[in-house]
Structure formats: structure tokens, C-alpha cells
Image 1 (cartoon, rainbow, N blue to C red):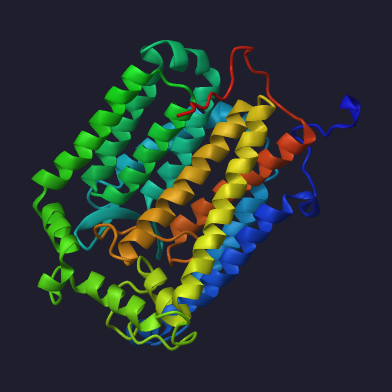
Image 2 (image 1 turned 135 degrees about the horizontal axis):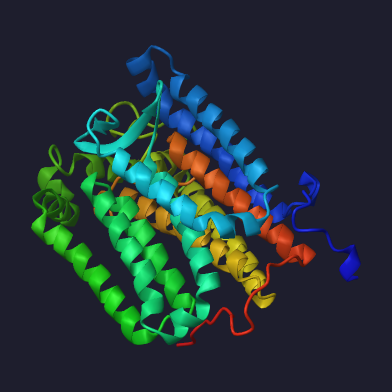
Amino acid sequence: MQALRRDSAAPEPWLAQDHVLLGLVLVLTAAGIVMMGSASMDFSAEKNNNPFYFLIYHTGYVSLGLLIMGVATRIPLAFWSRTGPVLLVAGLLLLVLVLIPGIGRERNGATRWMGVGPLNFQPSEVMKFCFVVYLAGFIQRRSREITETLGGIMAPASVLLLVAALLLAEPDFGATVVIGGTAVAMLFIAGARLLPFGVLFGLAVGSVAALAIFSPYRMKRLATYLDPWQEQFGGGYQLVQALIAFGRGEVTGVGLGNSVQKLFYLPEAHTDFVFAIIAEELGLIGGVLFIALFSALVGRILWIARAAAARQQLFAAHLCLGVALVVAGQVFINIGVNAGLLPTKGLTLPFLSYGGSSLVVLFAMMGLVLRAESEVRNGTSALVAPWQGWRVRNG
């Protein structure tokens, strides 16, 4: 039987990929094209004299993302495990470059974008990919140190602190929360000692609270979030318009394409607030359906992570865990912001929002998960130390 197993470097036919995961990705991608197109057409016609401007670009990014996802499924995970530190350095370099005047591009008071000709991309999105790959490899190589010594958790914590500092300099608070939360959860599930982990978690929560308290514009956002109707034509305007969209949608929605809020009432309707348009056009039923799709996607990725851990393929397990946490974190924050459950924060909704770098990076992550599932199913695995295992605490 062992002789019949595929070599880890041998590409697997597309038809042999995980049908459930691939199907969920394709369904969300197709739904994203429809809903982003619906949310953007009127705004695009006014701004660019072409109602299909953003839809064309979005479709182009989807095509590029699918190509990259296909390439990623052909690359053995052992390659990513080895090159994790290199990817981390490359991601840090991009975060430094975007802060240099003349290289980084400023928009709405934040310097988060770099340009390649007419196209922009966000280094923070690239860093999500790089950090997850790096940390999964670190946990695989240093599993015993993480579970037994204080130094095992200090190295990734130091890297996380540096990444957070660079992201907050842009500033990009949303990406900081997603990457920080993902890192803390990955280290906890890897079996980090409770005392240093508790200190790290406390510092993370304290830092977030301090940033909110001592940053005037963040405090204003927090106050507006608590009662947006007090500033319905000021700082709370965006949230108020999103809540109106939810109210208009009721249970069954006003119908696909019939949103009123996207007609210049709700800013960023095709990016950060696309879920509000979904709730308006498709109602409670449509919103719950999309939440179910995202839940199924995250659940499937976690199922693959658990299968990899059971077979002692630790890099695959922690890589899939990291991807699931990133996707779940972004979905939770974006929908929470749209529904007024969280303070307003710019963060795209996976597969559904307009945003080239976010889409491409997301597809790259899905490619890694598909590759992990393939290697788990075919029994290929890099050598791991006998003490390594995925320790999950109960209670």
C-alpha cells in the first residue's frame, strides 16, 4: 500500500481535489461576483462612466486568484515549511516600503497601498499569508520548546509585536487584530504554556484597549458605535445607512438589484459594507445563507486541519488552522461592523467584497488548504519529531 501512495511533489489532477472545499470556494466566488456587481454598478457609472468598471476588475482579480490557487495546489507543503522565514522577511519589507513617501499611496488618511502601474495592492494582506505560513512552520519545528519553555513563545511574540507596530503605523487596525488574534489562537492550540500565554494574551488585550483609549479618532468611532443616531449625519452616517439597509431587507429582501442604499446613501457599499446590501436585497434569509456558507467553509478547513493533526502532519494542521482563523476573523468582524455589533472598521468580506489584494491572497490560502487536504489524503508527510503533536486543551 505504501508504494501506491503518491509522491508529495507529484501534482494531483484537479478532479481529485476536495470537492466540498472547492465547491464552497466556487459558490462563494460566483455569489461574490453577483453581489459585488449589484452593489457597485450605480457608483461605478457615476465615478467611472462605466457601470461595469469595478465588476470587470473584480472578475480579473478572481481569474488571477483562481490561477494562483491552482499553482499553489501543485507546490508541496514542504516547500512552504522551508520558506516560511523568507516569506516573513519579504512581508516585513513590504510593510516598511509602504511607509516610505513616494512608494506608499495614501487614501482616506491611511498609507496602506503600494502601486504597480495602475493597480494597487495592500502589503497587510500579503502579510496575513506570510505570517500564517511562517508561524505554522515555526510551530512544527519548535513544538517542544513552545510547550515546555518560555523562550518558545517569545520568538513568535516578538515577531508579532514588530508586525503589529508596522501595521499600526499605516494605520491598519483591522489587519492588526486579525493577524494578532490568529497568532494567539495558533500558539494556544499548539500547547503554549498557560503562564506566558496568559501574559501574551493580556498584553494583546491591553494594547488594543490602550490604542482605543489614547487614539482620539478611535475613541470617537467607539462612541459613535455605541449610539450612531447621535451623529447620523456625521461619524455615524455609514453605520446608520447600513442599519437602514438591514431594516429595509426584512425577511425576504427587496430583490436582487433593487437596493436603495447603494444609490450613494451607503459609502463603500461594494467593499466593506457589501453585506448590508446583501441583507437589503436578499433579506434575513439571504444573510443567514451566506453566514451558513462561510461557516461550512471554515468548518471544512478545520476538518482538514484535524485530519492532518491525527496523521502527525503538523505543518499542514497548523497552516489550515491559521487560514480558518483568518477567514473566520474577517467574516466575524466584517458582518459585526455591518450589523452594528462592532465599531466601524475597514475590513473586506472574503470572496464578496471588492479588493484585489484581499481576493488574490485569499485564493492563495485556499490553494494551500487544498494542497494540505491532498497530502493528508494521500498520506504524504514531512518527518516530524516523535514528541510533536497537536495538543488541544479541554475546558
